[in-house]
Image 1 (cartoon, rainbow, N blue to C red):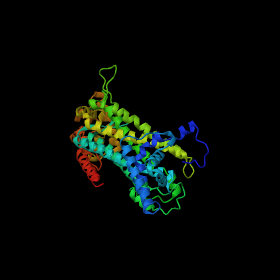
Image 2 (image 1 turned 180 degrees about the horizontal axis):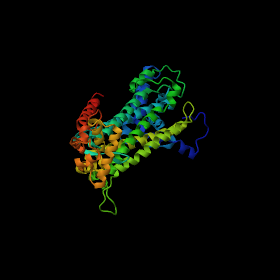
Image 3 (image 1 turned 30 degrees about the vertical axis):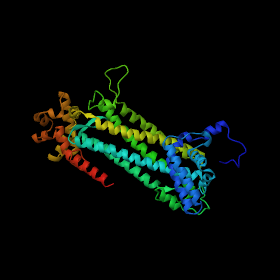
Image 4 (image 1 turned 90 degrees about the horizontal axis):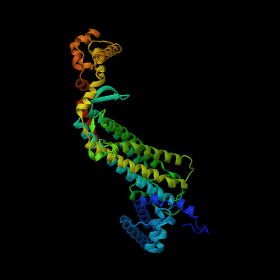
Length: 457
């Protein structure tokens, strides 16, 4: 490839450290697509003869068929997927293959290929996010009125509905989706034609190659185009936050499946047993999703550190930009699929959730609200009175709504029989009708709004 400048070949270790075919072979489809677009443009511009253009296109089509059938043979001496394809093209069509690289460098070639891959990766992830959102919406609708504890500090705070709880994760995923959509729009500029760093003197048509490859426009600056990896960072940043959201949901499933909670029963398909304890049913799918988030966050950090000291334009360090992207994409795709399958098959246990929601005197806020609303008690004073009621219930060893009217009036005579109607967990959740609240009617509205918003995209 650069034999005119070098009299000798590389050392064995240099050959090994320089080869990336074991990683970037995943880009073969993208490299073939970009090469076909480039060759077609060269032909249209009269830079290549019609015979050479036709031969190159036919050869690239043959290589695509070979690679599709698993016939890619790795050779470290050829370094990367780009040289593998060029070498194989030479075997198929002879010297005309050497003209494919006219007005092109591996710098703009790899940047283009990688953008094509990341763009497709985003499309795949969007599909998987949509699938998980569908499951969340379906399960939320199923449990729009199912009472469950709402925690702060992992302490019982106020009762909520399970549908409302699940819709919180749907809201997170909707934001995750928007970040990937934004990243896709921002990255959709074509580097091809930037050559090594300065552009080219050949009369190429960059608009033609950009259009052929589905880009919105050519990248504006050749130096930036060959060295830009913002699009990879954008993907990894969106992936890391999505993975964190999945990890939070996974942690809740792990807690809910434990015997002290018992809020869910794990299906056989999404759990494992123990090699020594016959009684065990382990939430391994959820634990692996939680664990994978650490690697995805690490992939983002790895790329940021890789980029932080690079001057313009291209440097060989960028050969290591693909490993974190491939790793994160594979893990995120798997995690999203696993979470969708697991959530679809989970069996919720409403009676356990309802009992837990009633524990911890979770309707104390409702008593304080009633005093402020109906008895015109300043809220801070109402808060103190409700706290005294909680203390009385704890002293008796009962839940708050088990206190009699006489016991409550002994704490404050402004409490009337009407206050008793707000102390059940069902009354509590039904009363939370403010926008975005947990009342079943609001949950149903939120589900309908989310589905409508998704249909409009």
